[in-house]
Length: 84
Image (cartoon, rainbow, N blue to C red; front, side, top):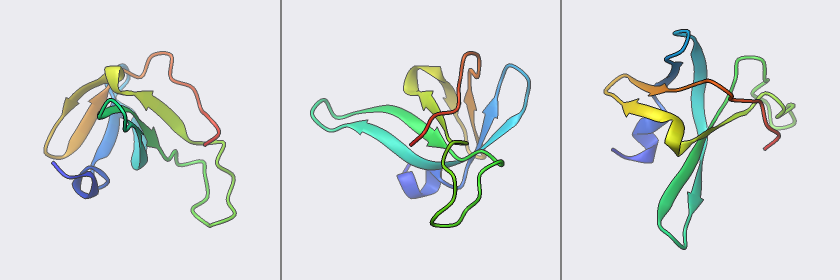
């Protein structure tokens, strides 16, 4: 699966079934060649260039349970909003 395809998938918290939002970025470790996590845009954030980024959520790759055809399932316990 390509990153451009992943951006079209919904991120779903398996704990409560809540939609977290779309992927806006990936956190990569280029030296090791691994994905460290995904950054999710929450619905509380504006989409403009100068919008507040405090609504972004970082999901460590270890919390990704399943990447499916339509959604990405994550274990949303202990996720917090981050400033990216």
